[in-house]
Structure formats: structure tokens, C-alpha cells
Amino acid sequence: MIKTKHTGYLIIISGPSGAGKGTICSELLKRNKNLVESLSMTTRAPRGKEVEGVDYNYVSRDFFEEKIKEDYFLEYAIVHSNEYYGTPKEEVEKKLEEGYSVILEIDIQGALAIKEKVKNALYIFILPPSMEELKRRLINRGTETEEKILSRFKKAYQEINEISKYNYVVVNDVLEDAVKKVEAILTAESSRVDRIEELDLGTTEELVHEDLLKWTICYTV
Ligand code: 5GP
Image 1 (tube, rainbow, N blue to C red):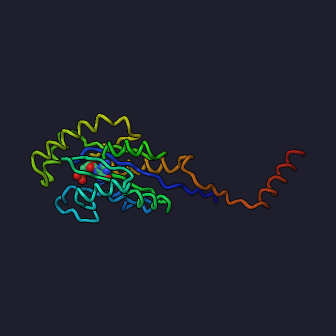
Image 2 (image 1 turned 90 degrees about the vertical axis):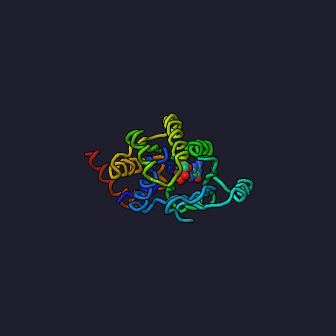
Image 3 (image 1 turned 30 degrees about the vertical axis):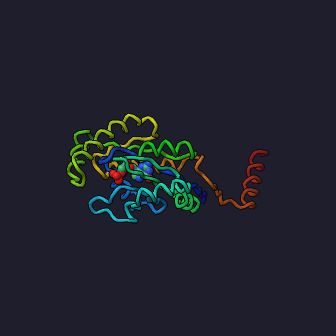
């Protein structure tokens, strides 16, 4: 039996707030044992039912800026309403070394910073089915002020302008379809030759010898 072992890699998932990145990522994690998600640190306050250590590490601005000085982040950015968001470096590196692929659900600034630092990462952009639907989703979340909703909606247009920086785009209309599309992308990506770490042909030396012998006999007859 021929076996291949693949290296873990970074999967960058971006898209406007309300496109459904979070829900898609949760489904991917439930269904794929070789995937883990990086837990970001942020200075923004928890929203709705969000939980510390599950959705984010919620910290103060001073603490975050201290961590920047310590070179703690793989990437960080100021995203919505002047709040910091960042990906801790050590945890991501550890998971990659253990062979996992690591999902980073980050914005375009973070994605571009990763491009500068990491070879071979995969970039997927999630789009809502329409801008009307995006606005409806943001309003229906009911967790933010009108001003914040408007700012996220404006940022959505800026982010979509950067779509050419990504490898794949998936429209999240029906959740199950979108998850299947991302899974198909991951299957194809994991089959890439440059992601193979080990190729085990499972062939013993005797077998190679026997086959060669037969081949030589056929050839000489
Ligand atoms: P939210 O406040 O809705 O949870 O996230 C706002 C935006 O910040 C989203 O686009 C999300 O992908 C992005 N984000 C979350 N964590 C990080 C991170 O660690 N780094 C960067 N650059 N963006 C992040």
C-alpha cells in the first residue's frame, strides 16, 4: 500500500464580517481531525455569547502592546473601531510541527503580513451571497451599535477589493454547500506534491528484485 504523509500548513480564511467565516470554520474543525484553529488575542470587548479562551483571548490595550514589544505575534493588525487583533506565534508553530494544518480567521492586513513571512500558506476568501444579505446578517446579529454595523459594512467593500490576493473564493449562500466547497479545496491542496513530506511505497527490496527479474526474462525471450 502506498502511503503519503503531508505537511501541515496555514489556512488563511478572510472575508467581511457577517460572511459566515466563523460558522464555516467551526464546521471544518468538527469534521476534520487534522485541522486546528488559532486563538487570536484582541482588545475588543466580548460580544453576545462569546467566551474568553474560546472565541478570543480578551486583553487590555496595554497588555497587547506589551506583547507586540515581546514579538509574541505572527501577525497583528488594528481592525475594527481601532481595536487590536493578533495571532500568537508560538502556538501556531507548535501545531504545525505536530503535523496539524492551522486555520487563521484573520483580516486582509493579517493575510498580507503572513504572505511576507510564510511560504505555502493557503488563502481562502469567503463572500456573502449578496451585499443586501450581508447587511441583513450584520443587523440581525443584534450585538453592535448602528455605527459599528455601518463601519463593518463599509470595510466589507474595501476587503472585497483585495480578493485577488487570495487563492480561492467561496460564496456562503447555503452553509453546507460552502463547507463542502472549502473541504474540496483542502482536499486538493493536501494532495499537492509540494505538500508531501513522506512518500512510502511499501515495497520490499525482494519485490523490486523479483519484478526486475521477470521483466528481464520477458524482455530477452
Ligand atoms: P470580529 O470583531 O468580528 O470578531 O472580527 C473582526 C475582524 O478581525 C474579522 O475580519 C476577523 O477575521 C479579524 N481577526 C480576528 N482575529 C484576527 C487576528 O488575529 N489577526 C487579524 N489580522 N485579524 C483578525
